[in-house]
Length: 118
Image (cartoon, one colour):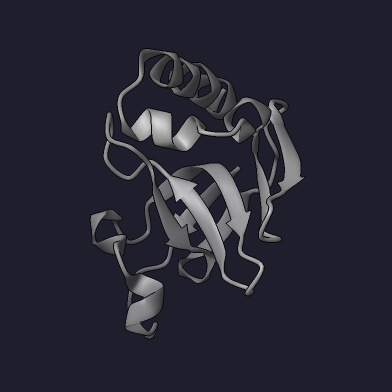
């Protein structure tokens, strides 16, 4: 799945938070889609190569390629949020382990990232 970043103009601060690393009119690959139970829709995008991906509000983008990678599936979390992304990343503790730099999580992230970008 690919999206085009429309820019920050015209959006409230809550929507643009953290999006300063994105470049206007640039296409980005989406690594995961997360919809919070309270209605906020976020896209997980790697805006800086070799850094952990950020979560950015979907209102900042338009879809340019809607194809869903074959390694993705849908899940509903304990608090009601819906995630579409690599199935392997849905295991409990994955994101915490990745942020802590645990080798198994780093390897799994890299493997599933490459599958998602193929």
